[in-house]
Amino acid sequence: MQFEPRDQFEQRQKKLGQIQALGFEAFPREFRWSHTAADLVREYGLAKAADLEAAKREVRVAGRIVSYRLMGKAGFAHLQGGGKRVQIYVKKDVVGERGFQLFQLLDLGDHIGVRGHMFLTKTGELSVWVEELFFLSKALLPLPEKWHGLADIELRYRMRYLDLIATEKSREIFETRARIVRELRKFFDARGYIEVETPMMHPIAGGATARPFVTHHNTLDIDLYLRIAPELYLKRLTVGGFDRVYEINRNFRNEGISTQHNPEFTMLEFYEAYSNYRDLMDLNEQLFAQMAEAITGSTTVKFGEVALDFSRMQRLTMREAIVKYWPAAAGAAPALEELAAPGGAQRATERYNSWAKANQAPYAAAKGNLADGEWTGLLFETVAEDKLVQPTILYDFPTEISPLSKQKPDDPSLTERFEIYVAGMEIANGFSELNDPAEQERRFLAQIAQGGDEVPKQLDADYVRALCHGLPPTAGEGIGIDRLTMLLTDSHSIRDVILFPLLRPEGNSHEEPPAQAAGKA
RNA sequence: AGGGGCGUAGCUCAGUGGUAGAGCAGCGGCCUUUUAAGCCGAAGGUCGUGGGUUCGAUCCCCACCGCCCCUACCA
Image (tube, rainbow, N blue to C red; front, side, top):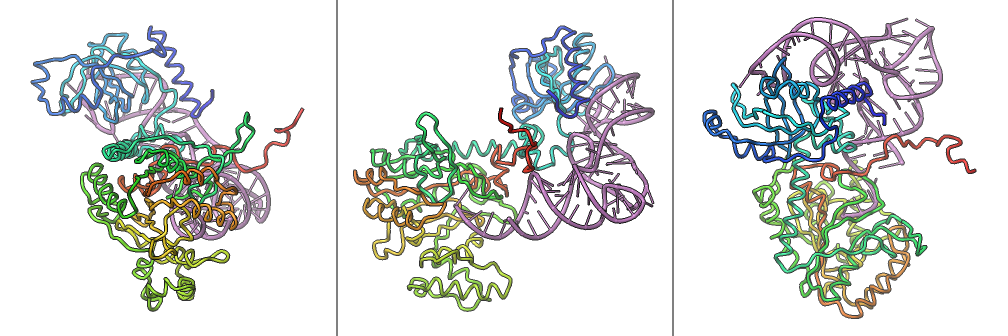
């Protein structure tokens, strides 16, 4: 066991020995407390000095020492517990020789318990008048600097435990995240949904377009994929009669890392039989407004420089969004009819690109030959996606980029699919589920024929078989919990809302391993 | 993957072509209502790593490593 800073580590071990020599256990097993620091603040925060003096009630509170001021034969410290702190006052006359020796051997970061009663100091701060000190646990390593806290953003991610102690905002974000998940469960439970858990290890990675992680099961000797989406299993459950079903859990996608992407991320997915995508759009308007209100207290939420208004959601078809956000400088926007015509989206994209390249604007880079629907999707992403700051429901996606959605009855080139965009981020994706097994098989086979890393290599025949047993008309949706948390906590990096975001392992550089390290006997 | 930025004491940061400083934390001393407690004293660094230029590099140049931001893939 060797950790920096060595000198302080050794110093604190020495003090731990001295504490034991005083007769305290080094690692006691429990402490019976009557209040948390937060309880004391709540209960006595407004009390008058005279009242506290008149009705002395014994309190027992535990916490981590986050400030420490020793002044000869007395001293102050703050104990932090449950995210709140309370001051304690330790006087040699009161706690006795041994108790005060213990107090002198304490460091920032140690856990202690105290027994005493509440009083107000000269300066009016609510404090515990300590009658007895209990040693609970030694911090052998020091806390981050007390004024600036842990400012190194990499260390905040790598050593989240220190970040949570030192950065109040960080603790609040994760408390809020827990509330968001709780509210979501409440919302769906109240509507007759049941929560399930489906496999995270899939023999065929389906339900989304993404590169999967591969793993291996030894006994069965088969490769498995960490799931990229729970979609196909949840719809099997809808076939099985769980008419309203949801799951909140992780998906894994072997893609890049950015402020909006972590290789593992949390999705809420839910399916509702006998509904279509319009029903879900309405449900979403309620859901987002209700979440904003429940979490932030208002349907208007501050996000950076903007105020996001969740009380209403703009609705645009994908083609309308292209027309609406087409930059005026790039010439006349294409007409809806042009975008709908064969080859129209490609021609519009080329027109846009020739302007964009001449004007250093981001342009649409197509890889390989694209179908009309793929051109439409590409053009949307290039001209409109980042403009969708206020909550927007974007709907009617091209069939070519929506392999699991049901087509529109009057236009098979489009599907009954929508996505919700907020702050330029895709937050949710939902659609009327394709439940025609023959059409589903055709689209799976078309995908496989097209190939690529992000497409399953194999037909999910069991899923098609399940559809053959009859999936009722169903609408389903996935909501990115990490991104939703970003919106509701004014966080601008997904790493700020994931406790342990993926980072390159510490000290494992890409350099050549030591020459003999892997030597076989 | 491409572009930009950053890397100095445990933490937060200054700084200079002549081998380094502050505050906090830690150590010794004083201090029985302090609160970024205070005062006195001492200690703490291969200046991310490896090369190069130079009489001399923490500083200039190159490469590499790590992180952050933007772009690309993606949700």
